[in-house]
Image (tube, rainbow, N blue to C red; front, side, top):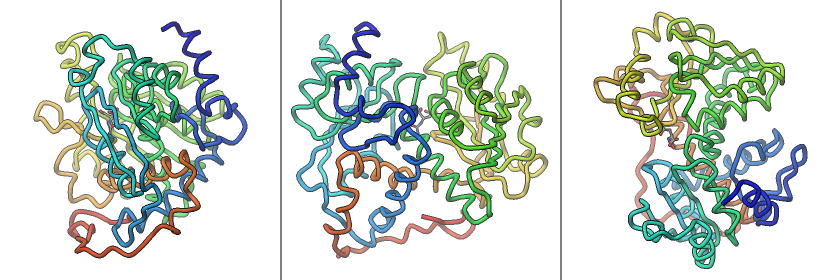
Length: 371
Ligand code: NCD
């Protein structure tokens, strides 16, 4: 499908044309394809709804506000937490989930177009989440869908829900420190060229004021020039580093990422970058401020030759990676609640939990629990 056709179709499709830049995002019925759709006020509204979801994610209460609704969760690339947490988020709101994973088990393997698949699936579902290896594919799919589509990651392009949950996590982690998002100091480390979570996060950070960003990557894996240029245009301080130790001083957040080996021309090329940057407790103690929060979209590559985030950080209370994944459920619940227009109804359909619920507080040595 040509780019023009995609854009034209998108303009006509559900809701997207109701979100011109500079005005509030009308979540109801909208596709969520890119963080470019968001203004600060939209993020505030989304995060307020995410906060409301805490009792349900904690299993203090249940809600059935989406009883009868169906999510089609279409993941044509590997995924654990994005797929399962979108599914759990929908279930926690009372809806049902149908899933397809891998192209080989779908009709795409028989040559069906994204257009046809979207027309078919949108007849079965109320909302669709899609991940696909090609940039722009989720937008193409959304253009043909009759129901809202949420981008679960399209190639190296964007991963909006991940960036939103990352920002939510930053906000919660720094909440007790009298530091808001404005004035944030963050080091983003690793494969900044292909990391779609990073791309979306950097675009979202641009919405705030006075951000100091250290972009720390091996030469060749720098962040896309258009994203860094946009950050600088908005007055943020962007510094580029090619040595890990140089880029992790004086920051509130270390955001570490994996080498996106599946995006390289060859495995040999990806292997050249593997293990170049390894954050471990020793490096953290020597170079970071004592309260620097450590984040990672996960999965972290824990093979010996990679270890971008060493297992020895597990006892570090500033390691926020599992609080980050817990927060993903809240933010994804909030996205569904807002897109399907039930955010104000959630508590009206709630009741106490009647089964045994395990405490989700981790062992003391394994860090703080904020969820
Ligand atoms: C990220 C992704 O898929 O882009 N993971 C995720 O969704 N949690 C990052 C990655 O795979 O490295």
